Image (cartoon, rainbow, N blue to C red; front, top):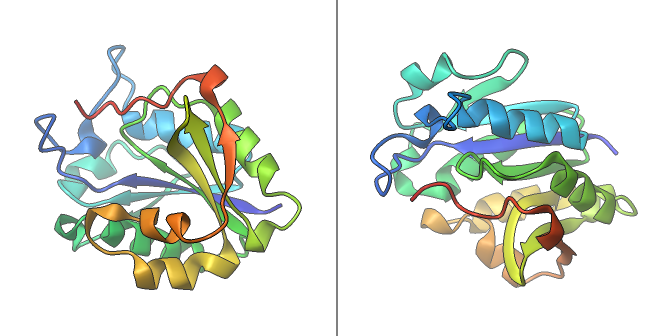
Length: 185
């Protein structure tokens, strides 16, 4: 399966005091690097980082080999960066995207591999997402056949949530892997 990773990192991080793409782990590793590495190690052939707030400063933190794209309308919510990420992925031959948020620094490559494996029978038609202790989370696998409808239906800060709620999604238990906690607090 040909999977492209997409890191949504456009938010202003108003709850945490600064742009999400500029945040770092306690050891100084940028969250952009952590998220990108988790996607690569999960099996993504390429990784796209969607920037927005303070994009010029964030460009310096994008790891080598990761394609940065900018959602100029990032202030409209997560849906704006999701649309830009899907449009960038559409220029590749990818069967699916593995989507994650930059503010989940504890997310593991193992969770990504598990979610990718769940969609391997029908890569282009798959919809799968990680669950942590019975709550939906990331990463989320979006098969290419769904991209146009997801982009069309995404509004505000809800991303693909409503689309996923109305379609059959394979829920992948990743509770044993940790990493579902939002770092934007």
